Length: 220
Image (cartoon, rainbow, N blue to C red; front, side, top):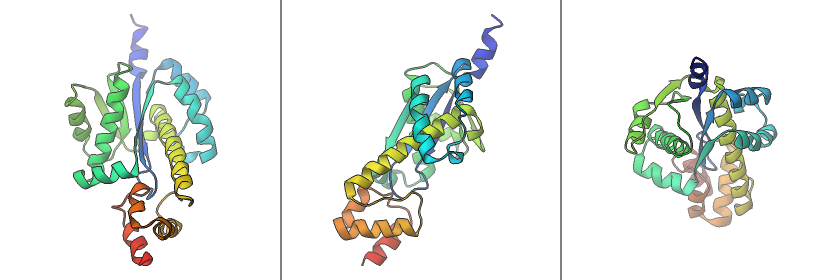
């Protein structure tokens, strides 16, 4: 019986998102379940916060993490993101909705009583969204949660999915869509408006960013 204690205490779900600060591309939220066995495997793979890893390495690591860990990935594409944002009008609420969705999807595959996420707002937003679905879980919100292996693994899965989707959108519009929200991003936005018209922006960009005003102002 004593053997079970370390295993149950180590079992947890890490949640993280990617694309929140990027004008182009989707918002992606990933949840990853980690137990004693996968914890050792992730350590061997040198899994750490995706912000400390190059994009190329992230794309290499993600398939291995997907293979060894039960996970769920929620992708909110720009069009859907803009619809939800228009309804919810609050990024933290939108994030909480996405976190709850990722958790709920993963809890259909695994049984786990604890989840860890980054501190981004009121944890009740996530818990309430889960309770509506009859799910209960202990949620720990931490600053720098990515230092936890489960959250770091989720950050890699979310980033890899974000990068793949951003590339796909770039191919669709025939313009490289840069990450972040920089002058290069504005320039790409103006190119899209010039080539495809204003309405095309909503299918590739998060319209509530100030970048939209800059793009449309210059496009005029």
